[in-house]
Image (cartoon, rainbow, N blue to C red; front, side):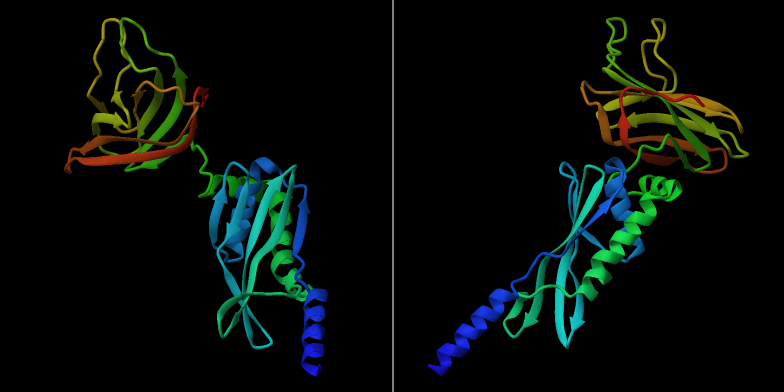
Length: 275
């Protein structure tokens, strides 16, 4: 009978202290930038991320651990961005027992809610409220990489100028997407470019015209001068290229030829940039 009483007491005790999900909602976070802001906050706070649902704008950290009354605990933080808010939830909260990781039955303490969820909420609010910090988060995001119109490499400045669809004509027989770029030589030596190429397409250092039906394989650029590069994509109807890879050979007068590989992310089609 005594054993039964202890068992019932334990049952009601655990029921009364059944784990409530710890959650905090952060207001006034632009949903279009929210994932990048959360990511940037995580970097500042030394968190690593494990799962990213881009469609539903949900981001989850890797497990992190802490010790409470000599007991090791662990959990993940989940972030859901919608309607200009971010909902932060602690999920998968467990403690380490003799049998391994076990679901924690009790509530997270107010101290730890403030330490983990509150600190993250404050950092998100700080970044979201500062246009400079928010734009930097977007520019430097590794989860949603921003299309950068200018790439600098090997003494060259490569600028995206224009992209358009449906460029195919009977006189050209070209693929249906073309990117126009400008390449400026910032070195003191003249450079020679050759054999430009792009994934699922080809490149030319001159725009094909009725009298120039074939691509131009080379371009020579003196210091301070600029050359054009046209990248012709295969038959595709994409509105955005999440990862656009292209390359060309680069030859300096005093050095051997090297292959310059470049990547731009989330490139929209069409677009036109005015410099």
